[in-house]
Image 1 (cartoon, each protein chain N blue to C red):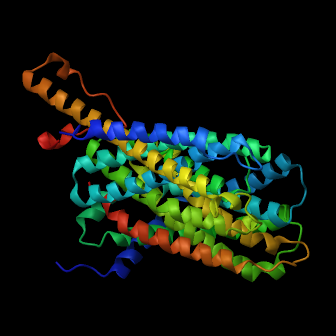
Image 2: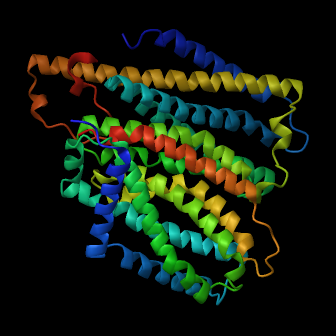
Image 3: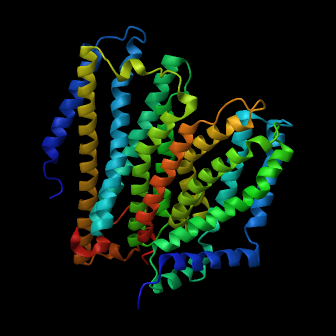
Length: 248
Length: 229
């Protein structure tokens, strides 16, 4: 049941990503100052926005978990954070490449967006260790949700504060890309936004489906009295869907 | 049985916490010693005899922040290991009162540390004299302490019943405290300026107060879920 709609969604995502890449390489004009390098912007910025959106969404899913106590919400929140962490590493790498090309340094401290993003990543990097350090699955899920909500609220607040700080009042180097993009660049940017969002959603759905299938398989095995079931479950940072009985 | 008033519960919890510290002196001397040692480390690490401006403010606040980590890790130790949580959950008291008591406890610890650390810093490392800037510094310290206390009380509860709490406490709280550090360090730097020229950036203090308030609300909303078993 969880794989429902996965096939058309994947097809649309593949098409959207392919279309975006084609547009980025063949249709979008080269930037007057940065030339070809500027095109990493179509990967980097949508990736960053989707990553942060994923973290916030994970916080909302965690609210769902604390309200309903349904372990499926915890699973959704876990997969969202997991995926956003992977996307986030991509953001840091593409950001570094861009910074090196545009400003000559792999890392710049006076770019508030970059610095805020690093802080968010440092915080979320503790999510899995936190889960791993709690053995009881019910408490693990509850504590992880408390973390996901706190961190999800931290994401926008942190961006606001780092931007307000005085060390950063000098004009932003990136002003030319945030506001008025020329027509074609703008179209490609929105296209990239859509395809990156689709990519996140599709991957999220894939992982959710995989987790549910694995849980169902485990349950069927148990019903069949498979010997493998005697092996005690390995301690894990991932939420398990079986502890809530057959709710999955 | 009627629910006891929150204020009396908070007072009782706070009293117990302070009595525990005053009888055992477990944390305070360690924090005092730690902060003085940190100043010595900074002296040798930076190879500077006296500091002013940004550098002075950064050294003071990073030291205070790390000293706070020592007590955040131990804030719920007695509750988790000696049945404090169970006793509290059996009582009809409102759970939020435990959070308030812990925030006040942390504020007490931070104030006590600063009572020693700030004069020691002025004596050992600070280049300009402190006298003139003292009232403003106290205001910044109060706002900064509130942020550390609120986040520390929430994260302490999150980390205490995990297997690697000594690591998780600082790892969880330090990123959350970076905005606090950014604001207090920025606000303290002009106070430590040798010429006392720059005015304290008010916008930073307002931002910090808002941050404290938002995380206070978040902690209050989520604290219940950490106490459930």
